[in-house]
Length: 169
Image (tube, rainbow, N blue to C red):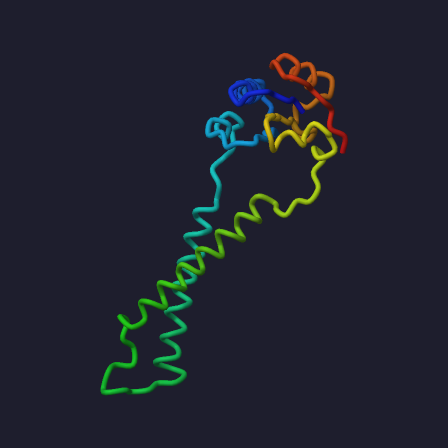
């Protein structure tokens, strides 16, 4: 894990790391850095598709419930109106769509981010506490195919890092 003092050096190091062929890389920053997402090479998330499907399922479920109650389970003819009148189903369908999409977004985000994660090996590094204040970290995971402890450490030293440390698992 390499520690940097500014976001620009972190982004430059992440670009060089990706160009060097490292794939299993993560970065930690106290502020959002838009370029970092592209520099690390993160792929697009599946969350928008999951939210769309959750919303469609929620809306379909809400409409189906109202249809079933109004036309099948408890049909009640009030004032000669039709049993299934779709305009009166719109508010509940809309609300169920929003509910399904919102719940899918929250639980999908937790699932895709592998949260909660109460322990990660980088927490063992005492300097990592600065990641929430004013330091920027780039970590190459040992699971990377190109990872070799000595070569990776030497590579991180060439990136202009303030400090390079080995994170024990």
